[in-house]
Length: 360
Image 1 (cartoon, rainbow, N blue to C red):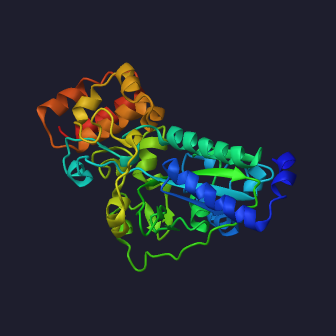
Image 2 (tube, helix red, strand yellow):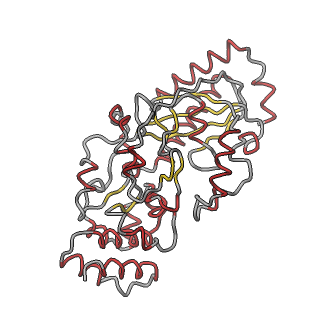
């Protein structure tokens, strides 16, 4: 970015303020519900992250501990970065089967609502690139890079600094007008744009998210131990799911939304207008047995273009085997589990055997 920096610094404060307002208008035209701007100072977030890593709360996510201070010092990740432009895009799909009713039906598969449609990485990255191009067309070449969970970026602390919300006790970002059902994406830039102001935290004495977490992964307000979190267990963990946690997972086969479903602020969330986030293949209301019967070819075909595909077929079957173990006993479930006792994957076999033991 450094070679562009001299050009961007030639703009006066009034011009930069007008540009910031125009960026926010363009962002909304591109489908973002809100655009805000933050500086790069993350000293407090760096202390919190360091402490969290030292406690081992990241589990097997070694990438969380990599890159040194590049995660908390944006200018080390992208030289010349002065500001972060952050976009918020709602994802709750309308007209889907109520999440709570799926969780209450042990024969159904619960998939986190963010993963039902097109992979958000692709959607937001494309829109942020379009936004960057609009800026470039307006002012000429400038230094920037677009990120959507694709690099060591502290997106929630940055979004909090920019006033897009506050980090709640469940560690998700909360917005008074939109709850927490939204994605975030960032543009690191050398433009010295005016920054937005943070908002106050509004969790108060509420700790419903802490109380309802199935595995008690929220060990204290604002601290989530990933090693206990169902989202980590079903998506990030590559090996065997700890025995003591399997029965607590219920029918959640990809992620977990419990801490968001119970949050009072999500009463104000609105449905997304994005057709890309609409459920594919009826994944918002589908039987565990149907998904358990997907071979790898079917899995790859049915999850193409979604965030689910990255987990791979092995973890998919592993998670469903646990969910079937937690389901109400039936002849069909027992037969389905027995049918995979000789699977080539030791991980799958272990979880199938566990699931079967719950019914025999």
